[in-house]
Image (cartoon, rainbow, N blue to C red; front, top):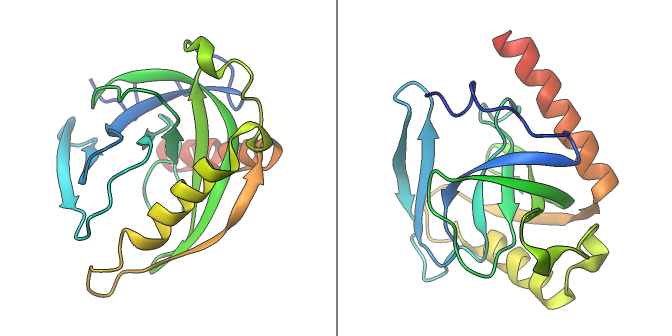
Length: 176
C-alpha cells in the first residue's frame, strides 16, 4: 500500500489530519518513506549528539516545494512506531529556513490521547518544550557538510491550516 497516495489526508483536514510516523522521539535515525518502494528507508543518522524531541512524519496526500510531503511533528509521551498512522490535531507550525529554502513543520497532538485534550493552539504548549524543539531543529544539521537550519519562528494553528491547505492543493496539482 502506498502510504502517501492511498491513506486519506485526515478525517477533517486541515484541523484533523492523519500522520504517518517516520521517526520516533529519542532517535538519531532519520527514516523517510519512499513511495516508489512503499518502504521506510534510512535517510541518515544525525551527525551530532541530539535526538528527535518529538515523533516526526508526514501528512498523506500533501506536497511541498521541497519535493516532499508536508512534515508533521507529533507531541507524545511515549514514541509511536515507525509506519503507524496517527490521527492528529494541528496546534501550530515551526518555520525554518535551511539549505533548500523555507521549511514548515506542523506541530500536532494525537487526538486519541486525552492528555493532550486541552492543546488547541501553540500558546497551549509549555514554553520550554517549544524551546527544546527549536533547539533541536537549529542544531541537528550543524555537523553535516553544507547543511544548515535557521529558526524563523513559531506560528499559530490558523497559520498552520493555511500551510496544510496549500500542501493539499499542491498535491492535487502534482498527482491528480
